[in-house]
Image 1 (cartoon, rainbow, N blue to C red):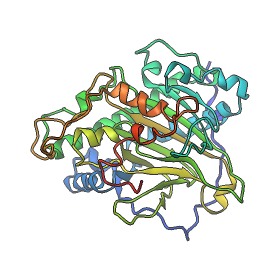
Image 2: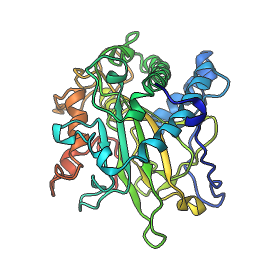
Image 3: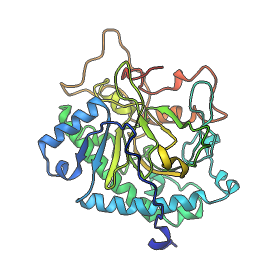
Image 4: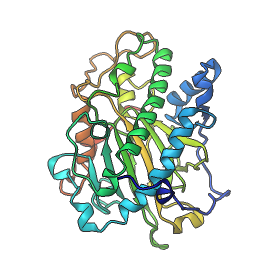
Length: 360
């Protein structure tokens, strides 16, 4: 039985994001204009995907936006109730020992850098395939079982937005019709997931990275949060971290590793991290809700053929032969406590070096 909408209503009223904090200059892209096939807006979107790989998506004034914002607000309430469960209960759903990235990851159970510094967040990953009954259901806490229809609604709407973005990218890359969309079909097995993330306040005298610098594993990420904390490292040899200010009625969208691989570096998967929120927001728990869209499990992550925009491989350059499922498992599990091995940080990195965005 699902909990009522009122019981799921998220009541967090955070202090405002400080005005004196430098923020990343993300473009604001209108979902409504993309839906209306506005060519100028589409070009701005493509520019954002090439230059930074991060942008705001203004989803106000659209049926998709109304649906996903309503679902997201309820799911923030679900997330709070999920993390109110006792540690013993939550650890029942840690499946990392089975080399699965779905389920629960506890506080301090992953590393954030090559020296093995532990993270400062909890997260719970819900499989899209599970929610859409494409795979056998995983054991889950009652609060998630009771809200499967809400999770399904959120996943379907998020995926529909991703499909529109992929359609736009497909056209700009001059690929055969539906090439990208056909690698990300909703009804096929993939690593798509909904993530609930919780980062509690850190000690005033020791506020640091809660989730280490990384590129996302998959294709497109759609993020909702109410507190700051997300930081991006813009392109360039001399770069500094900038906060991303949350905006009401907007999602924060970024591209992941697979889009870099598909386009031989033409599109950008930018390095980002999560640190303590700025100013008074740092005294509050930061909850995030994310949809990660990834290619179907058996898709080989190589340069796509058929277009004249994607750069050719360099002379003698060879691509790794790895499918999406193995790529995501390798990247997701390698930083978990018990799986992380000193000296292998670079071995399990994403496309940071390919995009020439890293200061490592």
